[in-house]
Length: 277
Image (cartoon, rainbow, N blue to C red):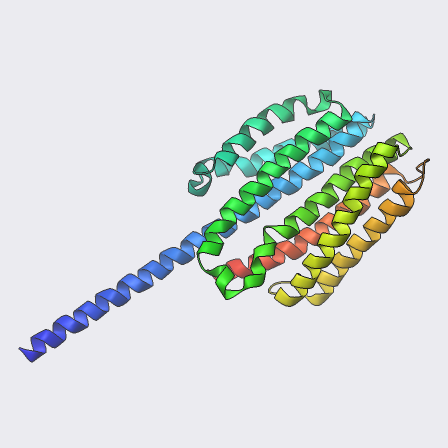
């Protein structure tokens, strides 16, 4: 009788252990899927930001970028097509909003005014940024934030730094293309200058503490790139009336800054993703 009871107890403990390990495995799979989705959404955001910047130069008369714009549309479609059946996105109203908005914007972007194009693209990117935060809640609720409280800024503050750089790229490219900086341009760029300076400083301080996937050298290089960009904005776009800076030179500078920031962010997300393999 005692052996029978012992056997039942062992069986029960075995079932409990199996359920716990199974639950942990499913939890890891769910969090890994959310991180994979975040990586995909980041690519969509990055391509849309570049589409905004190139559209600004096109609408200012630079027709040479049209082939790049067509290629970007294909890149965006290639990333978003597989996401249509994503279980996490099917629950998000913002994904439907993005798809509807992009389907219209990609066909009429070349007919908009410069301010209208900027507004439409920026609204679309804001939708994606909020969607990114919504998806990231799966990770935070999964316990990752409890393990590392610093992690929250990776999908909240830092992507906004990159977006402010993207906005400064689009506005600055338009200013450099027309060769003059109006008072309205200066106010907009001044606002972005302050945002990039403040938020990037806070984010890089946190990244130095987190440092899960990036080296201190990579973080410092991205930080210096942001500093160089804001200095260029202040000295060559804000504190002048006649702009001498070439639009391609500025576009490349801003793009390189965004690429370095995105690389650091990707490294951190990939490091977290690796822990759930």
